[in-house]
Length: 181
Image 1: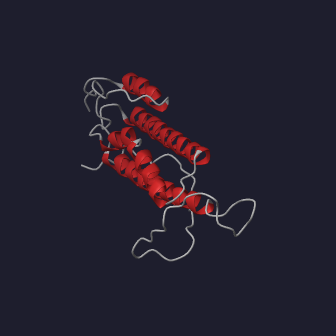
Image 2 (image 1 turned 180 degrees about the vertical axis):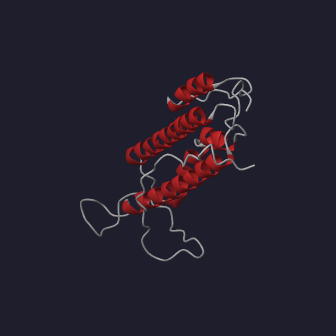
Image 3 (image 1 turned 30 degrees about the vertical axis):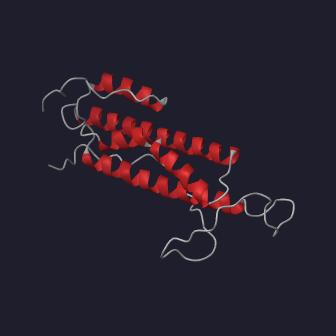
């Protein structure tokens, strides 16, 4: 095996620490994470990469949760706008998952996590605005605020929206010894 092209383990660790803190440093100068590091070092780097990615996902979820609590959407139009804004903030995570520097199995796992997170955010926003339909002081009575007209998605079951409670863990790290060519 040859040494990794430009930027080794230390460059990746530095990049990952900045990424974990919420920064979005450029990936220029980093070598691809596939071969060349040695199986132990590569496995450690993949573990760090997966953990940093999961940390950023949790930061995104916390920020969206804080925003929902601070100013709950007052209808499906407001919830949709808040969702679109939140999804746009996933850009750095999507770019990392799409990077050719990342092994394909880890990239697939990252994209699966992002899909789960987007689905959970959509459900949380729908639940937040539906909860706002009732006044806390008079259960069963309509809230005294403007509410967007209800919108039903084709094929969606009628009734309450459930929010799947999921624990987000780091994306599955592929075993570097099991390379797919």
